[in-house]
Image: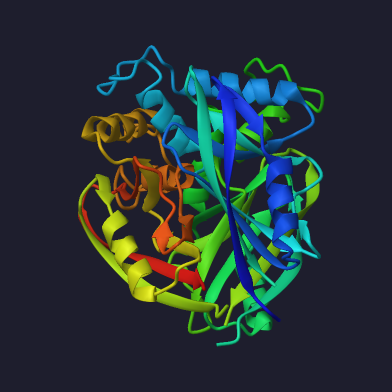
Length: 140
Length: 140
Length: 140
């Protein structure tokens, strides 16, 4: 075996709140790494957006998810930290309730995602942003 | 050092909603890998069940957890995506609120779980399912 | 490349509920490892505290987060498992809703945390505790 590390930054342009699929971009990084057995770590470098692995076929499932978070962490509640508006503390809380890092096994050069699993950036801000994600593939 | 990668699929039969301990099965994969120092990545390949690391001694603690999720993400709320029944969108949301992947350090051939920590599959569907988990051990 | 594994335990003294930053301690372990490219896995070995990556500049944002969890998982609700008091089941549930493990890429000897990201231990118990965290750095 010859283990190695391959890292690439990934940039995603968001248009405000919602889920944005990044599965293909991560898959391409895994392919470029040439690593056939190991793991890929996906890490979002922000505190007002996050990662989720989610159903990738039905947009309605994602809308239900997004609506659930609007109700669970409502913008019109009373927060102390609102320097950047009503989506300030709510963004941080929604990030904490979801994921910053996700690690996916690679076997026979394939990410071991299930049939219906997609990797999504979950944007919690109303405004458009360019989001940075660090991707590291490690293995043989 | 001689770093290597050892991957094995794990299959878990569930009997509907609830938490199912998989600690022993993961421990056996770590033992079979022969890897004494590194990490084990556990990744559930579905979007309607998830992973949690939870108190493994008191079943009442797990029942409290399961009841909490029934209240937090109630099946009788109004969801757009309900093709597969009232446990459809709720399963995806509960999955997002818990974990898809978990990474546990290995030191001196032992997973570094705390005394009361167990690894559990959290089934969010009412019906029985066979669930697939990808386990990758990497290290020396 | 010469891949290796470096593990160190980390101990954190908490003074009851709240978030405690551990970014510097994790950074020091990464530095001591001498690993320039790879990942660092941070794993909390308890079931009544957890990990979050959170905004590290504004204490008000962390207070909003802590208050949110007090409301989301209230101590005065009806739990079956309360042997150790009203912060017993609530601690486990809050742990499940946040993180047990977090994996952060390392590139050019630097953890790839974003500008405002800090790593925090989230203590869910009222009493002071000494908490153990397993840290494993792997890479080149």
